[in-house]
Image (cartoon, rainbow, N blue to C red; front, side, top):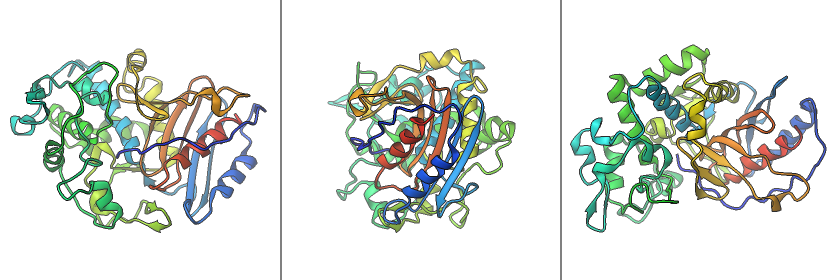
Length: 363
């Protein structure tokens, strides 16, 4: 799912350093974050070189499951890079090698020129395809799909419908245009289809075989049953927003259910070479700005704030992904810390970053 970011109003100037996780202080921070106006529940897991900690507050406990939304995209990236390491694909492969022509026809037409045939897997992963976002782009009724859902109009779709919606919207730039990126969920709907074509299996089966089972993840899965009440319902402003039909539709662009502990286990695997050679990570660090303070690389994000936000201490640079639900999963190399969690709030995505930064500054 799309992440809407804006300037973060954070004030984390504490210059003290901790050699151990200050668990009481961290729990108090989570407790204080609950205001029952925007934040009704939060859950966070942290892994340092020597310790791990999980905390929760409000209507989430330490084991609660939640929607990780666009953080799901890291799982897709892991599979694509794994297939690359096996020689099953290259990032320069064009989409026509894997996807049916009806899906590709008219996919990217800009100023009378059709660029659909030059789109590559790299373009999709890096959001440099120029494709519009079927989720946030305007529909024929003038609303976006996001606006429809937040108004309570829950609905479902498949990859064909998602791409059909994208085709009604104008692309933003020529694929691979230097310095340009546009975050689009359509990119990852197409990557889902490529994974299923290569594997001959449904995306969830691939995740089960390559990620869930090897890591022992028993609470992680793609949401597929509208009657499944396991994940905590997300909030939009001060109201619960049950959108089960939509959540069964996101799949690899935002459909996974998990908790912070299992998300952390996956994140560690992503960065330590479990799925693909760690050498790939440097190649993936080709970043373009998308929404301040986020930049998008090849299949992952970089979270980087300028020094003006904390003149007395450098802001940590983190790599990973986050989601519209307030979920996040980041690795901070300079601290060698993994941090995952959620604030379970759709309307204010900055809240999860505020909490994350306050925790990181005390490590």
